[in-house]
Image (cartoon, rainbow, N blue to C red; front, side, top):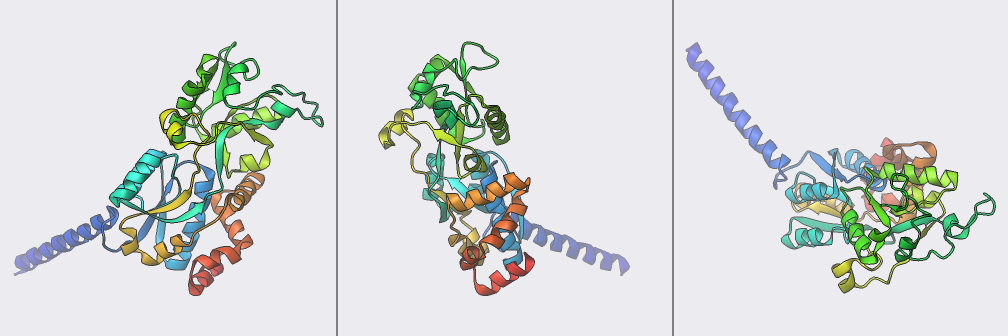
Length: 337
């Protein structure tokens, strides 16, 4: 009798484990069932980390879900969003990943729920003193006739590569970023590779360190950057000109300025069924480059984390984010802050 009871209990435990395992698998793989933890993407830059932190504070404190962040390259995190390993993506730079993004939208793997901001810029920048000088700092103009990206090939001596004398150096985006391949093509289109080296930094932090060191010393520097960032808010930089954006030319050679780039919030196709109230909140999520740069400047000036910047920013802009959520949710989040 005891043996029979033991076998029955063991069978019941196996059955329950199998059921529980099935539910967990469905949730973890982005199935249509319930969800306990909402996973966000960290593709490697500070502004997406800041927006993740704002979203996490609202999702956790206002709606009671756990959250996690999955780091990775742009390609890897977008693929994770398509497959459901990632549930929400707070900053998809749509034109940097146009082909993959449009394919994912068309297939229904992901849904765009809002535009986070659309007033951003990106390109190759130099400190303004390189062109105009800086009388207060005693810096003479180094390249007064420098106006365009193509002009850079005439200044290998100004932007000399310390590891390759006689050639210049332009800092590209990190290799895991989609924009790096676009700049590779610009090198060929504008003939930059005739006199300049295409230097691939290991991370965004490496670009910032390189620029900060050059800027504080009053030395020449040229490289890729974008706004909104703390860097473009803090330093006086000039974006070098390119021909006006033309879709056909861009698709063929990348020989124009970067296309208008809506930065959107996207979710995996199953999240609206799994957490409709969270998707409703994300559908209302809208900021701007200026608002984002406020947080990034706070991070830089106070040596603060993205989470600390999010808390500061939410206290500064309570009138904004409380409009994204119902009143009872807003009260819960305010109490937690």
